[in-house]
Length: 294
Image 1 (cartoon, rainbow, N blue to C red):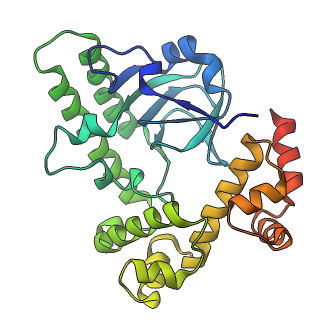
Image 2: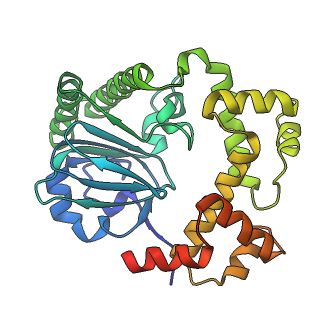
């Protein structure tokens, strides 16, 4: 079995944006790319989906979300996801590369928006009717500009995208238990911590070593992590290991021992206990369970 399929933005129809931006209705996108979305895949771009009708399930890195009118999903590059959608599912979507956004704005970054900042940020928000109409209107403007040939269309599309992101972040801050506005500094440090974990989790599994890399005390790192995620630093490291283990179990033919070694565990028995403790089933049973679903 090969590694999970990586979809690139130039795999989709692209209108004069150097393969850096794509927009469509969900209905048309499904008609054109239906065979791609049912299998688990990942992207090399940022993606936002607004559903205005239909139902189903959206699975993002083994976390399942209900699809219903008013649901908005955020994906950043590298996340694994798949869909199970009803035949009447529809709405709007847009995809863009990091450069499409950041090469235009000098002082703005895509990572300014918390839903693209962390594995622990919300990947779905359910809007009420009023909120959904506001966001849908922005999507319609984006799609209209995308399909037109007008002066400064890129700049106008970017303006609409930024308004979408700002409005969605405001809605999230009203709904989330973590008040992002109260933890700007903590968010910045936590984002650096996550990047370090992503880079080093196969070799570095100690909370104190990550604190050293960040030039802060382990106690301060624990305080930051707890404030953002309500988890310990060690739990965040373990979560990343388990996520990668799940991906390897599902999308490769590596043996359990080979996966353990790839993740930095020479003692398979220890790795096996760690997996079962966190997932509540054995690694071999997890692989069988998901293979039976596909």
